[in-house]
Image (cartoon, rainbow, N blue to C red; front, side):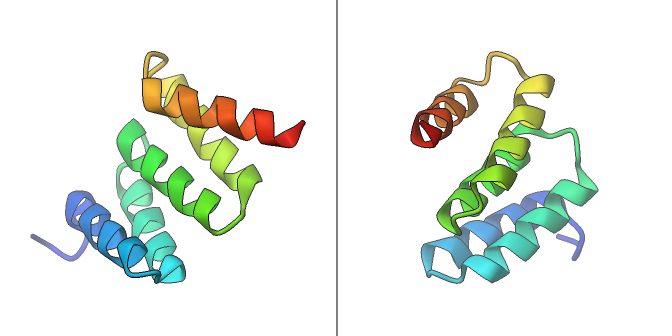
Amino acid sequence: ASPGDPFALNVMALVYRSTGRLADAERAQAYAVAVRPNNPALLFNLAEIHRARGDLARARACLQRALALAPDFASAQTMLAALEAERR
């Protein structure tokens, strides 16, 4: 895989996240999204990282973008609903 391969970056981000390296996970996932900005799964994974870091506004923004691209993306719908419920 090339250094800018969004799917390799996504895997790197998942590994970083699983080991608690959330800042590194965010950097890798944000780069993956920059390479493939219209990929709802990559946006969803970035939303999960933002949520884990406590940045709920950025998590919501990623989920809204993912749902604009894929309105039936059930996991994104569920997470967005959970974030909205947490705001109340």
